[in-house]
Image 1 (cartoon, rainbow, N blue to C red):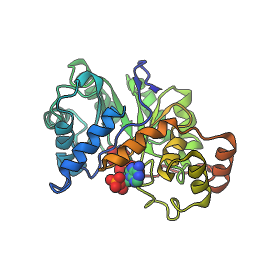
Image 2: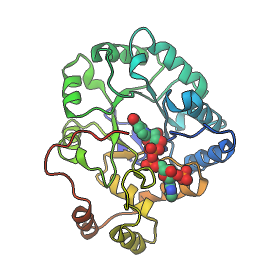
Image 3: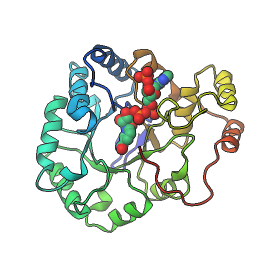
Image 4: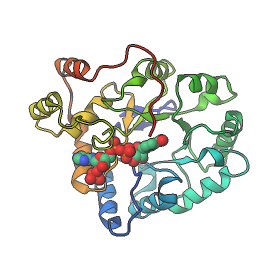
Length: 281
Ligand code: NDP
């Protein structure tokens, strides 16, 4: 489990949902995958008003029917151009309607846009007071963005920063992750599976990873997740539309990489030795 700044514990592996809900042909299977994921403990579900223009949120709204809402942890994101006084209430309420719920556990600014951060923070705090969201955070914020946020009134109420992080993209380990750790703000890792290897050619075929997977009797995907969550303060949100994969992802919690394995991973997929600007998709 990972502790949020307010002490709430969330599982280190949740569920991403980008691209889910977009095709009626796969909708039923995707609902089954999300439900299997919840049943296996992945109660944190990440979505955004952007995903499929709300279709991902609708799919989740459908998938969570019958579950005790208080047991779930729903995360959605507002477009940067909606993250101000003019549009954020409409965006938030539409996300709630599509998700079939009356509050979000976490609402994120999807990435920085032209609306001043002070205005977004004020709106987020107001949404919190009104009970529409329990807490808020940011996404795609690099170290300098976090520093800026920390200078803003109530900016320190940020609960999470969601950024790209996977074994072959370790730029954040240089300064962003240490910054987050020193401020006790958990990091939420998106694309933890490098989009099934698409973001890094040869990743899944790596002999090192296949050997480690074999030693643990697990898949390379599970090794990738175990790597991302190894520090205890990173939440990974892999996305799958398949039940079996959801179950595999949930089981990655039990995969503990040894010091030797981590050293071998460092050799093949080294962390950078200088500042690397945030990777995004
Ligand atoms: P991921 O790194 O999670 O990779 C998803 C791919 O991995 C899919 O093709 C999926 O296919 C496959 N997969 C998942 N589990 C397994 C498994 N156990 N075995 C084999 N294949 C598997 O990519 P995403 O880009 O989806 O990132 C994760 C989530 O992060 C998103 O869904 C979204 O919620 C969030 N995100 C946030 C961003 C932001 O700007 N804040 C940007 C990008 C993503 P299959 O369906 O066949 O299992």
